[in-house]
Amino acid sequence: MTIETGGRGQVTTYISPEPLQWFPDQKAMLIHHELVINRADGKLLDVVRTEGDINARYATKVLDDNRVLAATHQQKLIVKSVKRASTR
Image (tube, rainbow, N blue to C red):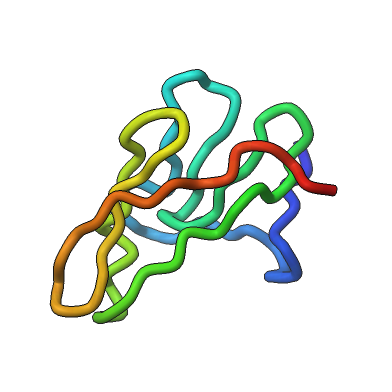
């Protein structure tokens, strides 16, 4: 499968706690704690933005099919909704 990265270049693997997290319905995945990718066609659906420390993105965790837990400034965690349908 070719993965669209929204102009970010190739998706390369690097050491991180969970480089790939599946959403419970198995129709999308969260790659490197920030890229929401559609499983069927590899399209980029959303980018999860975090704030604060450079390692803040490692706190991003899939909660359910439409939400993730993400870090904000001051090392707080919030629930964010993610897009799961392609708008293109």
